[in-house]
Length: 360
Image (cartoon, rainbow, N blue to C red):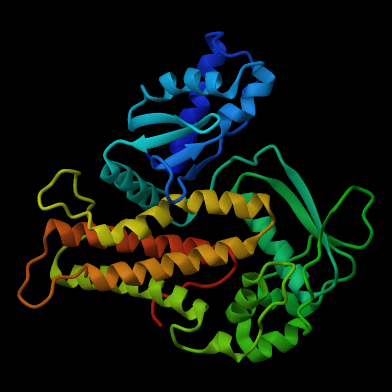
């Protein structure tokens, strides 16, 4: 069970409780689940009982008890506990089955993994100054929102800079608008699009403009072009290229990726894969949060974390056999994990408007 599936499971439990008249409260549009913090109980936690206590005119602990019995009966949920003033803590059944679900979702959805329709009822018009960072940020925010089902357009205060097109930026209209607008005003870049393109090229320029939070100054120096692990953009793109190279290498050795069933002995779900699998499971939530908070920098930091975890996993658990070693279930599963990581990285870069080359 992925975090998104668990969120839907909890929401379904709320609807059941309301339909059965065990709970008299409006059903929320969505339910947020988060990974349990260090020292906490279970795999995930949710504060929906505290959210519903007031409207239901019941103590949060009572709401939590009503929901616990309904969630606990769902497939994939091993245990549900009530902690603190009314938090629900979930321990999932068979972690590897959840891992298989994540890998299957990435394979099925491809670059669209993490996209959804949570914001399908929202319509936005983003308005920005004639400034390159504002233009790139507005367009990236718009991409994130569209990926979550929202609609809208971007407009500029003045006629757009012609060089913006080379950065992948388009503007639907410019000038004063009679309708309410959402202003996008990050700290200015201090350079024009033409200057950035000449010094950095489109990909490094976009990464530099989007990596920092909007209230921070963007780092736009020559370090963005360094071909080494100290450069986060290079590390992210190199992780993607390495994942694709593993697929090519496996084909030459005559095997393909396949996530092994849980319980196979010895288990091919190496402990070293856990951080990477967790990050991929969290990826849809990060994309949704990036859209809601107008924060493409969250996506950039997520990609950096995935790349870091990928290399840790790759070095500890090589997906390709060495020497005379024959491909095993472990290699096939490791390759499935590596391929999924590459897909997540490519999809995230695409949302930021940055290319993910197959070779570096």
